[in-house]
Amino acid sequence: LKPLEVVLYFGCQNRHIDYLYKEDLERFEEDGTLNALHVAFSREQEEKVYVQHLMEQNGEEVYRMLQEKNGYFFVCGDGTRMARDVMTSVVNIFQKYGNLSEDVARRYVVTMMKEKRYVQDIWS
Image 1 (cartoon, rainbow, N blue to C red):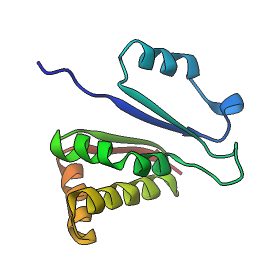
Image 2: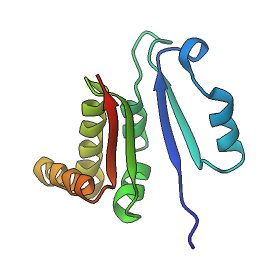
Image 3: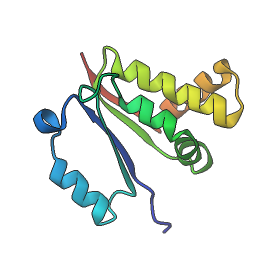
Image 4: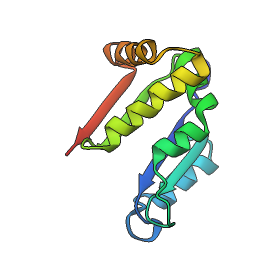
């Protein structure tokens, strides 16, 4: 078996209030359970930073994992805006790094959903 790459993007408003499982997540990165942990704290600076911003900053890595390695993508959280914004970022990443049109990139995400490679556990 090939070792899996596991990358987690976690977002919350403030690390001191709602960074749930901080110690666990950091330990998972230290012990290699996670290859990388990217955390966005949206209310700790003047300009809000969300997980989708971090994903786009690491777009080449996200593209490689999802497209070239046939990776899986799980979105958990707010279904009102966050899930839509994250999906838009994934489409943007496919456009930029896969040199795809917006329509083809969106269809690729839909295909991932049908293949259960893009899964959403969201609520509003």
